[in-house]
Image 1 (cartoon, rainbow, N blue to C red):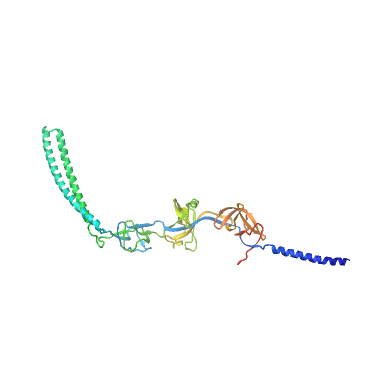
Image 2: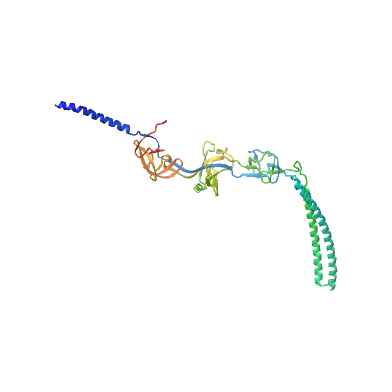
Amino acid sequence: MASHHLNRLGPRIIIGIIFVILAIAIYFAMRSPPIDVDVAKVNEGPMLVSINDEGETRVRDMFVVSAPINGQLLRVDLDAGDPVVAGQTIVARIMPAQPDFLNPRSAAETQAQIQALRAAVQSSTARIAQAEADRKLAAANFERVDALHQRGFATKTAHDASRAARDSSAARLTEARKGAESARAELKAARARLMAPSTRPSGQSLAVFSPESGSVLRLTHESETPISAGTPVVEIGNPADIEIVTDLLSSDAVKIKPGSRVIIENWGGDKPLTGKVQRIEPFGFTKISALGVEEQRVNVIIDFADPLAARQRLGHGYRVIVKVVEWEGKNVLQAPVSALFRDKGQWSVFVMRSGKAWLVPVKIGRMNDEHAQILEGLAAGAEVILHPSEKIEDKTRVRLREEGT
């Protein structure tokens, strides 16, 4: 009887075991595999926050030598980089300008003006003769009235009137003579306008000397050419005495001050250079960004802190990248910025622990392009997940990504 009962239970046990095995297989088949992730450790170390932008080197004191007169600039015998001595090196020679040819209309107008001025000279000559005769008559009349007045036969009024007439006639004579001089001078100037200019410059050239010792930085004009007064010819300066100018956003410029440390990168050397902010110009200006947005910018002047030997390959107008240090600390607990995200209005990270991703809210302080200062929520050595995707939630199974996958 007992053996018969066992025979009936045997198939049921086997079927039950089969169902358990199938259930376990279905569970593992439906269970999602762990998500591959990259992690980084939270650590303590130095950290700095900087304002980064492009800068340009420039000679601290640059002198632009311009043409002092209109004329013909002779070929400049200097090249960029040539040394110059103040007051001794001739940087340019200029032949004074010659008068231009008159067009037919201007020539005809000048001829007519000459005829009018000739008539004016003749008229002024006649006025001089008339004024001279009037002066002699007035002088003789005054002598007669003066003699009668001294003997009491002429009134004081008549005496004063004759003196005034004599003085007025003398003034009219002087005026007539000056008018004649002016007319003759204008006639001479009009005749000079009809003179044909020379085909070649004549006379001595004007030598322009270097105002400062240094080197030629740039030649704006090198070949012989007509030039106007005030046109730049040569730029002179000391290429060893250079500084950096960068235009920062006005909102960034207010965060720094003179003396702030500067790191200079991408200048072409093997390692970064150092510098410090010399001054922040008080006048801002509008600049259009590459995206077409108007920005308020401020020029910031930076001095080099390294010796000349470390930067001797730099010259005027070279491009560099400057990092003006806004804040820096030594033992700062920090995590990669790529691990941070916003969750329910606050900063959070996923910490990888025991094969799972654990959601951890954090409080951050300073932040730069790579790291963020951790004030609360994490400890040194914690492994945070980098670039967490939307598939990762709290307690999601994760595994470290293998290299090459």
